[in-house]
Image (cartoon, rainbow, N blue to C red; front, side, top):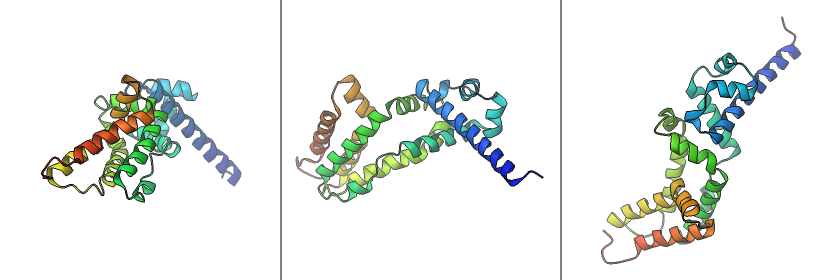
Amino acid sequence: MARPYQQTRRAQQREETRRRIVEAALELHEAVGPAQTTVSAIAERAGVQRLTVYTHFPEDRDLLFACTAHYQAANPPPDTKPWSRISDPVERLRVALTDIYAWCRDNEPMVANSVRDLPREPILAEVLAPMFEHWSLMQSVLAVGWGVRGMKRRRLLAALGHAIDFGTWHSLARRQGLDDSEAVEVMVGAVRAVVVDHGSSR
């Protein structure tokens, strides 16, 4: 029977190998995207054999879930709680978009590759479902207090969903050349325009 310290050492080595595989996969996801990341490339970057990768992660989804958990722990999405304490919906939106666009900039390569690869890697939709749910929560928090209903509320929700979308930030920042503060003001103005009273609120 192995001594306790030998068992502990083996567990540590196993966990270290697992960590190296996950970090190698994440580096490749950021560089070329999940769809272009191969087990051979992961093994080479992690300094292990292909069989070792499969031993730790028998299915692609197992590795993708591990990568997502590891990445989000290090790069958590913006927290909605501070926004909820802001009563003015316009100011709340401005603060939220400032946080969201900073996160988009900091995580641009990974998010851009993941969004691009969604149609090619159906499992990504399942893996990223908690992130999509968090973005829906953001939208709900930002929809409070505008005083609209019916058609205007439907349009407000659509405008908010568009404002917080990574693709919106990417277009404004990369294609149109705005800095983040300018992008925030453009989208705050666009959302406010939706709720300006031109008659019926239905």
